[in-house]
Amino acid sequence: MSRIRRSLSAPPHLGLPRAKKTVIFGGGAMGCLWGSKLAKLPDMDVCIFTKWTAQREKIMANGGIYLESIDGKVSLSPCIASSSPDWIKNEFGLSDFGFVFVKSMKDTFTSGEIAKTLLRPGGLLISFQNGMGREEILTEATDAKVRITVGT
Image 1 (cartoon, rainbow, N blue to C red):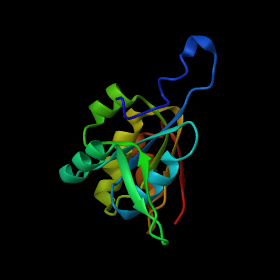
Image 2: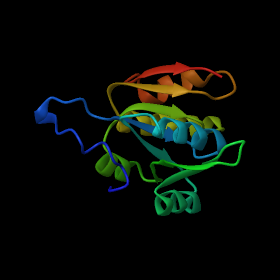
Image 3: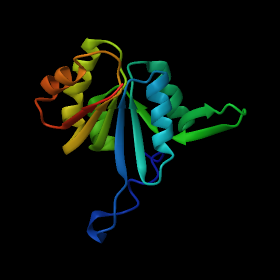
Image 4: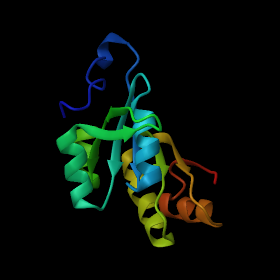
């Protein structure tokens, strides 16, 4: 947990703002791009939920995601990764936001089912997936326990 730098910085009893937490569903190109960009925001902690063991291990070993810009500059976006919803809930904590970047309808439904256990009450689940019907799938999978918005 030492890789997540801000979550522990503001104890609740002090009344200070806490870091916002985001879980990214899908560790492909778009999930990692958005995750790395969000991780650079002040007071934003990011966890990538990925099925890929090698990717999870690489992100954890590096302490985040490396991005290379068009001018060749390389930067590290500090974040963590896991393929275990229980680990995320227990070690990272509940998230304020979830972003869905998976490709298949089955994985969309599964992401929604997991999101309802990883997002705070009233949390926002955002889908930037291609295709129609994603909102309905996520609404069904989450039992409407979180707010959902979609875009492409």
